[in-house]
Image 1 (cartoon, rainbow, N blue to C red):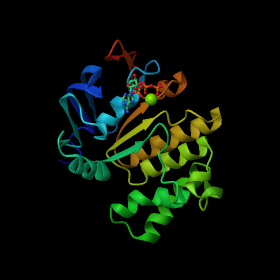
Image 2 (cartoon, rainbow, N blue to C red):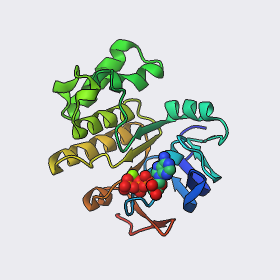
Image 3 (cartoon, rainbow, N blue to C red):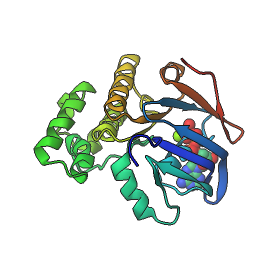
Image 4 (tube, helix red, strand yellow):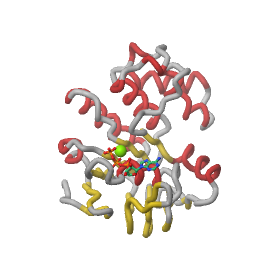
Length: 228
Ligand SMILES: Nc1ncnc2c1ncn2[C@@H]1O[C@H](COP(=O)(O)OP(=O)(O)OP(=O)(O)O)[C@@H](O)[C@H]1O
Ligand SMILES: [Mg+2]
């Protein structure tokens, strides 16, 4: 354990849906403090790979470790515990809790990790202001627009500065100015947490902002050009 362990390590991973292989032979190590992008056509398995790295869905074969903890394929509760402590996940569809306010959604991981309510609220408000969500704190999540919900989901994913941040098209529904702000906030959180950052995107500029670049092609995760 500790910061010497990679943020995320996948070995001979086979990502599946309904028992069907989607991406095969994934060997991927994301060191702490490093960032990568994953591109690929719609339906190629980007979200499925991210959800497997997060332990939301178990792999068909191979294994994933997050910050040195192996995600047990047959123990979803243990995977959820590891996820709570070590993973910040921005789902493609945001997946906020609709009945809670935007602020309560962002505070939730901090509260679950043991932060006091005032501390969680202060941190949540600061990150929400940075993401231009300051005026939306008290809005029920179900009333937010797609781009607003996505930014709330980003704030929720980074509030604990987890060792692994996984973001599925976090800039998919916003204009270029906000896109830059979202990437900046993900980077700041990753620096504060010495985190590994894995970002799925269809946006070349966003991909070019990461240290390394990968593409899913023909069911394989391929290393693309290095950015730096
Ligand atoms: N819950 C599910 N049950 C069965 N099949 C699924 C499920 N979710 C996704 N799939 C299938 O798995 C494949 C990969 O889907 P995935 O969502 O990972 O693609 P993606 O690369 O993220 O696409 P997009 O760019 O459109 O978000 C697709 O063929 C999709 O239809
Ligand atoms: Mg997807």
